Structure formats: C-alpha cells, structure tokens
Length: 122
Length: 193
Image (cartoon, rainbow over all chains, first blue to last red; front, side, top):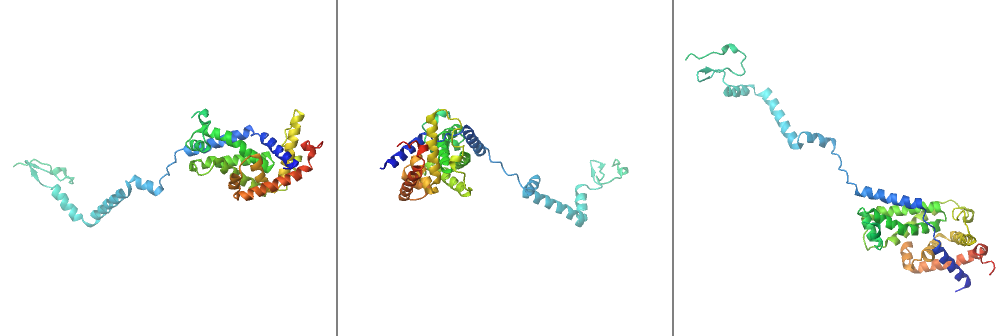
C-alpha cells in the first residue's frame, strides 16, 4: 500500500469520526412527520356518505318500500277512476243505508241526512 | 412502550411497532438512522441544506412504507441508503453548475475555537471537495465503502450493481482522490512531509 493511500485511509477514518451532525430542527421535523403519518394511519377510515339516490331510497325503506308505495298509489288511482260501482257495492255491503239492528234504523255513515234518524216503532 | 424498552430492538421490529402506532419506536429509529441518512446525503451533495431535504424525504418514505414492510425481506438500512442514493442522484441531475465547495461556508463551523479543530475542518473540507470532483457513481461507492463502512455486497445491493463493479468503482475513486488531494497538501497539513 502506498504512502498516499495510507494517508487517504487515515483521512477516511478521521471523516468517519467527524460525521456531519444532525441539526436539531431536522430531527424535530422528521419526528413530526412520523407523528403525522402515524396519526393518519391510526385514524378510522371514514365511511363514504351514501349517494343522493341511496339517501332518498332510505327514506322510503329501500327498493321494497318504494315498490309497495308505488303499487298502493297505482291501485288507488285505478279504484278512483275505473271501478266506482265496485266501491259502492263494497260500501253498501259494509254499511247498508237502512239496516235495522235491535230496533234501531242505522244511518249510512255516508249520509248527511240526519233527519232520517228515528226510532223504529216495531 | 417506553423509549428504553426499544434500545436493543432490531430496526424492522421497531418499524412494525411504529406501524402499530408506537411513537417511541419512531423516535429510536430516527436516532439510529437519521445520522447515517444525513451523513450520506451531505457527503453526496456537499450541501447541508439540500442534504436536510433529502434526509427528511427519505425518512418520510420510511414512515410511509412501515405498514407494508415485510420483516426479514430486506434490511432497512440497505433500503434507506438506496433511497438516499436515488434522491441524491435526482438532485445532482437537476443541479446547475455548483459553487466550488471551498467557497461555501455552510460546511465549516463558523467559529472554530482551536487550531486543531481548524485543521480537522480543513482536512475534511479538502476531502469533501475532492469527493465532489469524483464522478457520481465513484463518489457514491467511496462514501458507502470508506465513510459509511458498508461491505461491498451491501453496496452492490444499494447501487444495484455487481460486487466486482463496486470494487472497481471504489478502487478508481480512491486513485482519483489521491491525485486530487495531492494538490491540497496545505489543507491536509502535509506540506512539511
């Protein structure tokens, strides 16, 4: 080994003992970075908010609720326009205009003629 | 876990503890690794301000990779040296022609109190200046081998080359350094010899 190489090796050894010192602010920044990364990792993952369509469906109980509601609405429209006779006969069957129970003449719930209220003589 | 409990723990165990939210593990890792990272970056770049940026960036990458680190697959130090080497290479490529190192005051203590300290700084400044004149790959190999004291197989991993290539780079680097330092005997305190 040449004399110059020996001197260079001595210089390297000296350099190893005189390594650049870490500045305190750098250490502080590095530890702050670690804390921020750790906080982000440990934080619970936020649940994504449901989409607007999903929220509206939720108000009506989901697709099943919406389907039931639609069916009921369609049935209401159908009954209102297409089957008045049927509605009357159902009403008559449920509440006949002149039925007599225990000597009283009932008045149809749909009647507004309160003069018909009377005691049955028989 | 208290700071002392981690004193003898291996680096990868500390990294896993950090990934599980242990702040003390991060502190021990930073105390162990940041000096090496910062020294490597300072010697590669010859600029402390840039070296601080590189060191912080490299450590940030370590914190971020912690949850995915697979224990036993690689050494954290090897991985980190490689990250620093790549970050330094990027910096050096972007850098404009640099100010000669002896004209900068950021590498020397501004208020040395003793002649010995002055001479030490002169010698180290001369070595740093000579290192900066080496081609980048030679400089990297010499720093890792002779200043960081790493074995050639680890340097080969860091630089992604073969062990023989490492030996060749360090040998050529040393020859160049001897030649470069020949003209700096005054700073080295060799003028009387």
